Structure formats: C-alpha cells, structure tokens
Length: 164
Image (tube, rainbow, N blue to C red):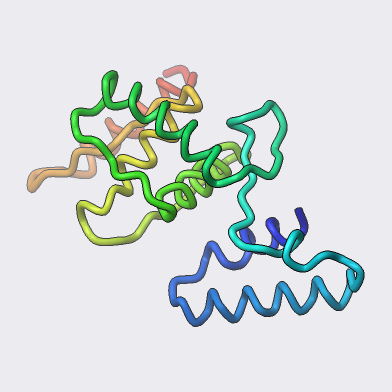
C-alpha cells in the first residue's frame, strides 16, 4: 500500500519515461531500506493496482480480473452512452484507475493533456458513469463570450445544488 500511494502521489504527475523509471527505482530503494525483510517481487512488483470496483474495499487487484470487470462495464457503457468502442489495453486500465481515484477524493480534480482523439474525455466520462456522476462540458465556439461562460457556470452551480 505504501508503494502504491508513493507511485500515485509522485509518478502520476510525471510525463517522461526517464522520470518514471527514476521514481520507480527510488521508491524501491526507500522501501528496501526501511522494510529490509519484505519479499521484493511480491511487495514491489509492478504494476501495483488498487481498486474498490471488485470489492467494497480499496484493495490490490490483479490486472486480468480488473480487465474482465472493466470490459463488461464498457460493454454496457457503449450501449447506453457511446457508439464507439474503446480498445482496452494496459495503459487504459491504469488511466481509468487514476481517474477513478481522483474522482473519489474530496474536491478531486485533474488536468488531462494529450493529443486530440486519444480518449481523455471518453475515459473520464466512463469513470464518471461508473461512479454515478454527471459530466458538464463547456461547448466553446468562435462567439463564446464571458457571458456564455457565466451562464455555463450558473448551470453547473444549479446542478450541484446551489440556489439563485
């Protein structure tokens, strides 16, 4: 659990593979220094995946078991919300778990950066759907103004329970 939290706290914010590798080796080094008797492969073997989708508790999960669950939920999501199927590869599972973890935190927020069409919005909508959340997305156009933004903000505040 300690290594998982360290990875989520530090590594999730990194972009370059070299930085991620450096973080991995430092987490392993600190763990072995302070917990010398641990089974390195069992305790620090990557990927370290935690979720509460397969159980009511936030526990370690196996990638294949998680993949089967997410695949089944994605099938329903396609039918209800989306017509375009997603390809479920390892990085998608990692991103879905990260997004889920952030959505569950009080005032959780994230900034997803990447090329257009990479699936950032779809994955966020999928995780929100899995958690029973609704998504509001601003529709910016060439005549979008400060007044339009104010109206969008009012709409979000009304949906969240604020009164006029």
